[in-house]
Length: 519
Image 1: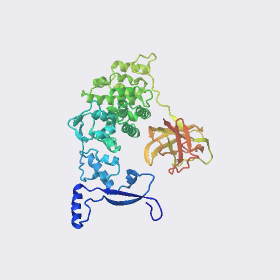
Image 2 (image 1 turned 90 degrees about the vertical axis):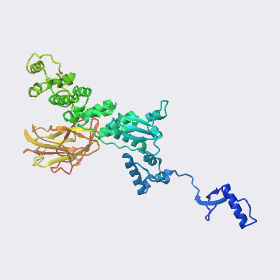
Image 3 (image 1 turned 180 degrees about the vertical axis):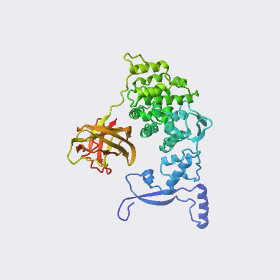
Image 4 (image 1 turned 90 degrees about the horizontal axis):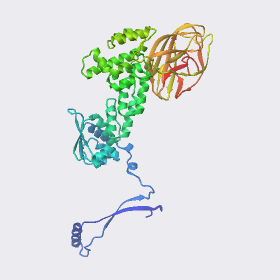
């Protein structure tokens, strides 16, 4: 077919084939109106529409892209998903399939929906169960375990399946991923969701759970996550936990989560060579764990029972390496040591001929701090660098997680003197760590360390602000030829000027020549 401009066109037509009954009625009607009419009706041809010839056919997703859905349709999708989470999922529209342009959206409507459900799960422990609907085909497509359960050689035909070892919110989160291709995690359910994803072999959901845990990892939950990561056989998460526990050991040992770990994890922490903590803190943490364990076992809270639940873990505490004051005022009076053990340890501190001890007597190695030096040279002048309560500040970012333990600062250029230093570390204006201390300068151009009370965890690809307010009468050295990027081992530091700096420090020169960190 050719149009008025001579372009080739395709004509789309169809033939309406009438049923025999309709043909006969039409034939009779025709005879009454026109005696010469034929008894047979020719096929009726309708020209529906004229289309230009196309080389490429469009798919449904191209014709109805998801991003162009009408607001009402988008609201309906969200409404159904919210209803399904509450198991309140009655579909009132008989043509609901027409509301969604993609199979993913139509599948999402079936999430936690009784419509066409051919299996039900009773999830949770007795007394706290929840009955959830499912669709065998969808579940089998999303999990090899469900495929074997419903279509394998030992397939289950039961309409109701009991799952007492998975929490209902975690099972719902897994179903939402299988049906909707959406990952919905929270701090309260992520561990249970990881367990469900591992049990039913949903690897991408399990990976998302591990990533969530790694990004939310801190000293407060590191010990608990260490225990869980070993249970779930996630070596990368285990390594991340150890990094946090080693660098922020005292915070981790004093956290509430430490008392919730199992005895095997307790022993692995107590024997850790790189634990960066005072031994008295390790001892006190072990006693706190013992008290919690007595409650779990429903034992009387006595020193004998504390020693009993600690078992061989007691000898992993390096009591002979404590400061003498810490031992005399702490461990020696705790009651968990026998009289002979207390006497032998006192002799270990004081006698020339030391007795043999069951406790490890070698100091922990801890972590070796690294230093990022951002200046290529330093100098001093007769009229600077002067301190009058003003702030020296610089911003920095790293490409992997590190723990800032303190700053290296310049000292006096006019002989020995003492400085008072208030150091701070902020992230987007939020205070992450601070400390007020003094340091003694010997008049050299060396840097002098000033430490935070606890190392501060620094996440990658985010700028932090390092600040110091110094108080001292003497002028000091200052850095020159500053670098915007410094490579320290496997960590790359980037520096930029800070608006908080009111004493002249910037990228090119000034104070805070070093960041002291663990990696």
